Structures are given as structure tokens and as C-alpha cells.
Image (cartoon, rainbow, N blue to C red; front, side, top):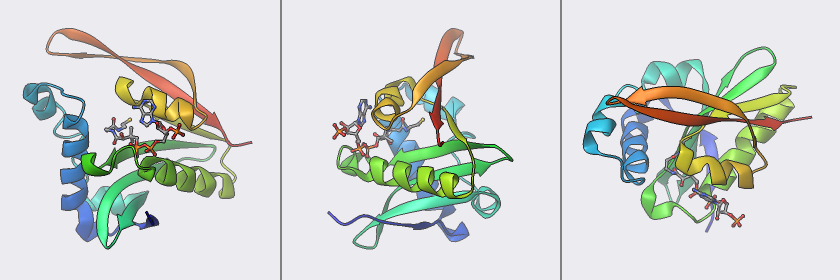
Length: 153
Ligand SMILES: CC(C)(COP(=O)(O)OP(=O)(O)OC[C@H]1O[C@@H](n2cnc3c(N)ncnc32)[C@H](O)[C@@H]1OP(=O)(O)O)[C@@H](O)C(=O)NCCC(=O)NCCS
């Protein structure tokens, strides 16, 4: 399988939003939660224009994405979404390694992630470690998101 990584285009906002929804649904969350997260799962042309967003391509099809949101010393990894049919085939790894290398080339020392709890194992496999937790709430239930960090050296 040949995965190509390139910068996302602003006219890909709709397909990336569709992939974000499909990927999040893969964990089996109630549909009411998906609706609650509507804004978080929407990737706008403005977001793509403002940040370094990457897409993974297989045979001309967009199969995943991720974004680097950069500040002076820190990069936040956001919008890591893989099409369910392509999960478990190395697309996430390819995107993660690309983002990590790009951030390191920019002399950024730390990559941080507020992860979906189901994705924590993936990030740990990529070398991330837990540095804290982000507390949130959904439909009256507490929800804890792992806060993860990767040292870029
Ligand atoms: C989590 C996600 C990004 C991983 O991408 P992926 O393409 O499926 O992962 P890969 O196939 O590249 O896996 C790389 C390695 O991580 C492991 N891995 C993948 N997902 C994992 C998980 N959820 N838990 C533990 N390990 C995982 C794989 O087994 C593989 O390990 P190996 O090195 O032993 O082969 C993807 O499954 C996804 O989009 N999930 C739904 C949306 C989501 O939660 N995104 C993250 C938001 S913070």
C-alpha cells in the first residue's frame, strides 16, 4: 500500500469533515454525542488555510488527515482522522510521522495532543506519553481526555 502525504487544500474541507465524522463514529459513540461534537468534527476552509493540515492519499483517494497547530515552542496535533475502511493499515502512522518530522524541522520541541481515550494506545505506540488529563462533560457524564506529549528533542 502506497500512502502519499501532502498539504490539504481548502476545497477539501467537506471531505475531511465527512472523514472526521466517520472516524469518530467508529468508536460507537451515541449519535447525540456526535451531534454535540458537530463543531469539533467540522473542518473549515479557514482552518485549513490558517494551519498546516495534511492529507493521506491512496490511489487518488483522501483516506485520512491531521493538522499541526503551531505556536512558538509547541505544536498541537489535531484532527487526526482515518477513514474506517483504512484503519489499522498504517495510514495513521504515516500521518503522525510526517507531522512529527515537520514539527521537528521547524525546531519545535514538543508535540501535544488531547486524545480521544480510544486513540491513546495509538499515540503511545507512536512514542507519546501521558502528561495529564483534560476534564470535560457530555450529557451530564464526566469525560476525561488524556493529554499526551511527544518530545521532539
Ligand atoms: C486512532 C487512529 C488515528 C489510528 O490510525 P490507524 O491508521 O488506524 O493506525 P495505524 O494502522 O497506523 O497503527 C499504527 C500502530 O498503532 C497501533 N494502533 C492503532 N490504533 C490503535 C488503538 N486505538 N489502540 C492501540 N494501538 C493502536 C497499531 O496496532 C499499529 O501498531 P504496530 O506498530 O504494532 O503495527 C485511527 O484509528 C482513527 O482515526 N480513529 C478514530 C478517530 C480518532 O479517535 N482519532 C484520534 C483523535 S485524538
